[in-house]
Each structure stands twice: as C-alpha cells, then as structure tokens.
Amino acid sequence: MFLQAAGPQQGGIMPIVLMVGMFVVMYFFMIRPQNKRAKEQKKFADALNPGEQIIVTTAGIHGRISRSNEDGTIQLEISRGVFMTIERSAVSMEMTEAARKRAAK
Image (cartoon, rainbow, N blue to C red; front, top):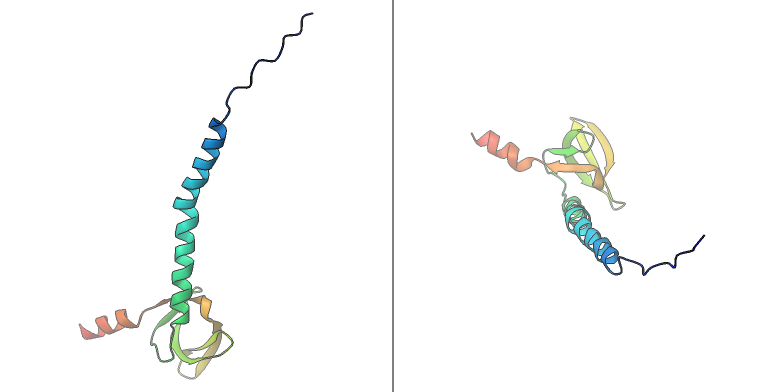
C-alpha cells in the first residue's frame, strides 16, 4: 500500500470572503432595518403626551392618554371612567390625526 502525500489545501481565502459577504448581506437586509424600526418606536413612545385621543396598544386596545407617569408608564382611559396603566412601549400607534381627518369629512 502506498500512501499518497497530501496535496496542497484548496480554497484559501475564498471561504473567508464568502463568510464576510454573507454577514454584510445579513446586516444590511435584516439587522440594520430592525434597529432602525426599534429606534423609531422608542422615539414615538417617548413623544406620547396626555390628551392624545386615540391610542392603539400592541394588544389592540383603543383609548386616550389621561396621564403620563414618571416610571415609564401611561394611564390609558379606555372608556369613560375606566382606566388602565400600560407601559409606553406597548403603544403601537397614535391615530388622533386620522380621527380628525375622518371627522372633518
């Protein structure tokens, strides 16, 4: 039995270039847009003020902000005299402008 000497390894730098390229593609198509949306959501949640008419939470609850608390929560009036305390981050969207446009028609 003859043992053959191992030949030179093939590939070299090509697998490294492919791995770096895959990481760059993942960053620009997945990680970067997700971080951008998270920053926009935080900016939106921080800008909520008492008196805004129609707020929709991530659970689909509609209401009006009656008070903003110092601990990062807001008091939401969901019906006349019925209040809930929720986290600012649980607010999905603010629809006051859309309600005003519908009322103006």
